[in-house]
Image (tube, rainbow, N blue to C red):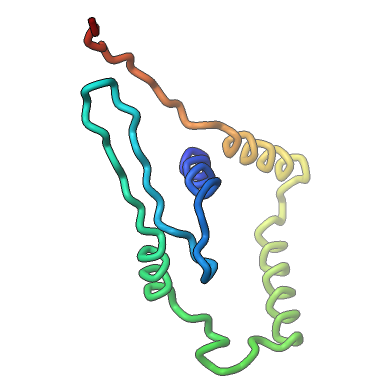
Length: 125
């Protein structure tokens, strides 16, 4: 995920927006050795965005025509969730919780190992 996030940031860093506020399509070009063919990758961002919009379900509040849950319902639901979490954590010490958080954060910081293999290049005159 961190590698994908870096790749996405680089794509959108210089991406141009259209007048409608949508990102224009992105082209990625290779820089080949002299005499080699250029590799071009086209990313149709507008088509991808339209496809994702069509596949994502509409929020329930839009389907019902309401503005969502009332404040009372929300408070009852979160209180019930906290009570369930409290029951699940009975017998777990604060030290165990802190150690688990520390382990989780350490694992998220690790970047994936990437191995680069040198390729032989033809000698040019």
